[in-house]
Structures are given as C-alpha cells and as structure tokens.
Image 1 (spheres, rainbow, N blue to C red):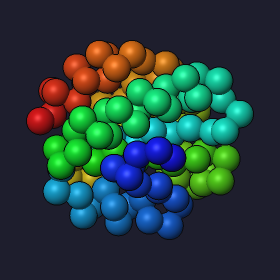
Image 2: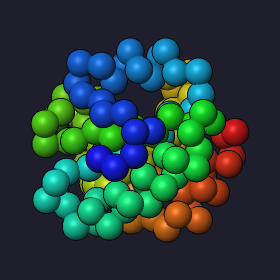
Image 3: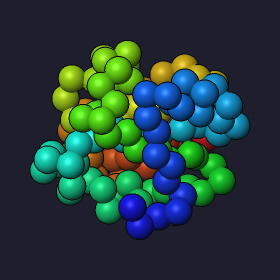
Image 4: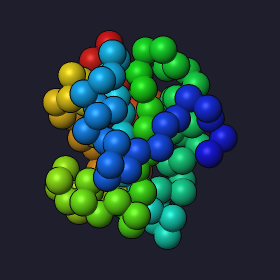
Length: 109
C-alpha cells in the first residue's frame, strides 16, 4: 500500500476502529484477484492523502476476513462503505471515479 494514510482492517479490529474513529471512516472491501479493485486502488490512495485528518481511509481484504465481509453483507467488490460513529452511512458498489467518491465523502464532512 503506497499511502501511509490507509489503515488495514481485519475481522479482529474492524469494530474497534469504527467505534473509536473521530472522523468518518471509508472502508474499501476488496480482494487481490478483483480487477475493479485494482483499478480503484490508486484512487483510494489519492483520496486517503487528500482527506488525511478529515476522513480515515481503510482497506479490508474480504478473502482473508470473511467474517467482517459477511457481517457487513458485502457480496460484491469493490464495496466502499462510509461509517461515522460506528454506523454505516452509505455504501457504493463497483468502480467509482475519484470525483464520485469525493461527492460521497463531502456529504459527511
């Protein structure tokens, strides 16, 4: 992962991270074999850097963390979910442009 502004979530820490976050958290549910996930990855990194301090960007590998993927009912990837105070606010499924992701995030800042 190129951006130090992205945290990696897993089955063990996701609830804790979402509950403790002081800012909205955008979680990218992805897998290494997923083409659209690879396409969106550089966009996610740019967003993480641009929104550092305003939005916490996180990634969760659904292959390695099936419990979390199941708990959040993620059936297609990439899925981006925005959380605030541990609550899901919005989800977006499939590839999105940087502009589309920014529009989603701006609604919660």
